[in-house]
Image (tube, rainbow, N blue to C red; front, top):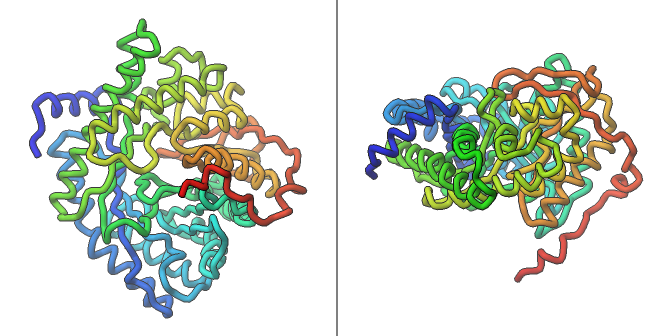
Length: 453
């Protein structure tokens, strides 16, 4: 594949002046041939397979990045949901696997591993129960392992018993990592309609319909969109959509080039480019700043959801034309702690949980990197999760919750996670209990839109 001089120059310019990077090259690996009733043997099988396919990826990514003159922020691995790997369905089995994988990933130079995951939208297996019980310890005792649970789909409805268990494991993880800002919860997310080729952490896993191994690309790019909008201050909204589309095309094109080059070097299939705008705490690399450049005084103001809807749609339209296959989540992320403008808006009281929930109806995913007081009750957490996942189920889109009850912190205080995770104001959460509803348990049936056969 040849690249034009203009494409290369545009890439260099975006990297140097617009905070652009490729957020992640994620290698998906199937583990279906790694099973064993002996948990130590199963863990070894998983580790050996990761070594076989992943050992050369970090150096290949670095070579491609240097050749193109760009930054690749992270190298990641996404595994088959561990609850689907055949081993003894015991808590200790999954802890053994997690620790082995964490060590191997560190040795090979990977930043994170996704796939310590379970799919419980229709109910639980013995393996699901065992894995869920292991999650708090795994997130506490490992550095790179990330975990996710899919608790609902438009086809299957919402597993409320699963939501209750998720709320409990979040509280447990928050307590176990209380001396570090309850940061263990930043490595866990609960989904409705989780996608099987998402390259972003904490929700990445290698879905059952994917090939043996595959390379997926996750982009960044808010700075590129921001710069394009600022150069056109008088554009009307229809013109603004076109401007965003063109900028999104350029960003996505870089992801396509990186994916193809790494795929060729490693002789591994190239999967998808996730064109989501993924912010960082750095000024100028913020979805919140993009919304402000569009004309919103501050994220959370009336009109924020409409502006985010325009942004998300235009990003998808532009990106679709630049890559052979769009996948993952694709749109715009709104993680509170990872976005400088969102952090400021939340700290000043302009961006409430209720407004964030409304915004999730039109963005890529959901309530992301939200810090709340550590003494929040499990039933309140469960109610918040059920609300957010229901938005996804009814609207046939992916939604999720990555929430951090910060032990020892109250609303209005700040917690610092460091690095890409940034700082977060602890946000007020309504403490009126939904317990009488949530504790009924059982299953919320799928909506009528699920009957499409």
